[in-house]
Picture 1 (spheres, rainbow, N blue to C red):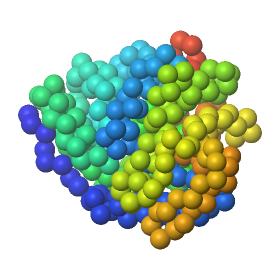
Picture 2: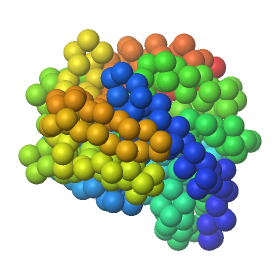
Picture 3: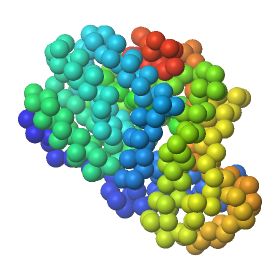
Picture 4: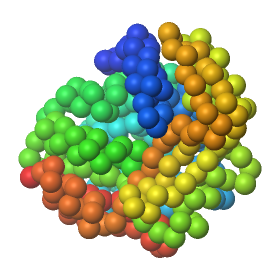
Length: 321
């Protein structure tokens, strides 16, 4: 069965407008910030794939280990008819779930949602070829804005993997989970991957690798802004910084201006003092009881929680009440 034509709810002009709004808001704030979604043009996606293979970067391997061990449990517990993946990318780890559902039986439809038309077109074609009995229905959309576009009917399982929820601030997480619950029916399921709180000596190198790949990835946001908005950032004038915040239990990625710098972007002249830092990402780490509480506040009940053998990464299966 070939993949169905993509359902596009996010056009190029929507992305351009969103980028302009984010850049204007973030670069005029104190302290300055940019959201991490703008890392991911074609080059940024390649760099992130490289990061996932680095020895320091444990989350991808750890989450894969959880799914490899428990995909069968997930299929059995949920008995889902439709699997929806948010921020799907290449859907590489999701194949562990698809294989488990193929063994279990009953899954009829796979719905990957991503902002990238090209990535989604490629992944849906590959999955449709690999799982010929599966209906593959790709949606181009933003998981923070297009949850109301998710297909209805049947017992649904929404997978939100990779620890991506940790990139949202606490208020944004609450808003997302509330919107997620509103999009689901009682008895639908949410599978969510979360990196866990642990020794910062393990966490920080995952965001500041010896080979400098993460540094290049971090600076890519400046290259995206230069290309898309005609800005004149010198990416090499900014140093990559990764800092553990023990109060909030998250890692922050920042770009530090090494000397006084003025950047022209949109109609703004943006000044950076020497040593001034621009926050480009937070990546929150979680405790099992905290995940359960945030899910409960949004109307979900945790049904299962699994970790990899080293306890680095957690996967939670929750049911919509």
